[in-house]
Image (tube, rainbow, N blue to C red; front, side):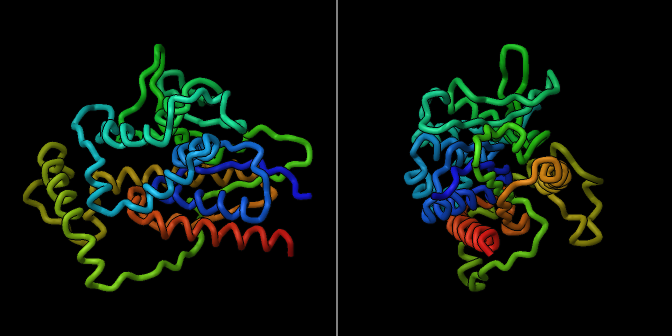
Amino acid sequence: MKPPVTLVLSGGGARGNAHIGVIEELERRGYIIASVTGTSMGALVGGIYADDSLGPFKEWMLSLDRRKVFSLVDFTLGKSGMVKGDKVFNKMKDFIPDTPIQDLRIPFAAVAVDLINKREVVFREGSLFDAIRASVSIPSVLTPVKTADGLLVDGGVMNNIPTSHAPRVPGDLLVVANVNAMIPVNLPKLSREEGEKQKRAYQLKIDEFHAHLQKILPLGHPDKKPRSNEEKLSYFNVIDKTISLMTYQMAQMSLKFFTPDVLIEVSRDSCGTYDFFKAEQLVDMGRDATIKALDNMVA
């Protein structure tokens, strides 16, 4: 008989779609997931799974293209974040009911960070929707969640692989899925024509927003042209690279202190943080990475 799985899912933006493939492969092999603990996108996928809503959520994610992704982004020039998140989270209510976490079929925990009180916040009870909304609030991108005495942001700020908060049971198998691994990636290539077709509408909107943002928050003299492609970093790219480096370093320390029985790794270069239109590719990558990790464990 196979041991119960204590599953820990990292954050990683769109790369977190790989967690769907991880869960599907574990179940296909007959493993029973006894609990799930996640940060950011890991909390989102894990919470939806614990609520038995992963099927409809996956179907919706696979339907997204660049245009649909952009239509769910409600930009704001407020001080606390560039994206309010109202549009996407109103849609997410189709998959994330206001269920009490303690009533889910398996134990679930979502990790966020309280900026005011400088501490991790672990949701093990209360509203599932509120817990996930707090856990995915990427600093300066998604607006944070205000509480009576705090301000909650993405749990990856302090703990992107929250193994320390995973409930262990005797004889379990600790499985960690890290979608920010520093490993090579081989991506399928779109044809040039198809790639350009997918890009046009989405990129036009992004370019318009960047131009508007540059007028408000100039990153240099307006008449000065960048000297190289390396200098053409957008506001979001700078934030993304900064947060990715920070979370990667902390994740490495976490893995040293809490060594998993099975480590499933998906490359941090598999897609951009906001490339949610690549869901199908990411699900397949998560499945393949799980197959590889479990086969190596048996070997």
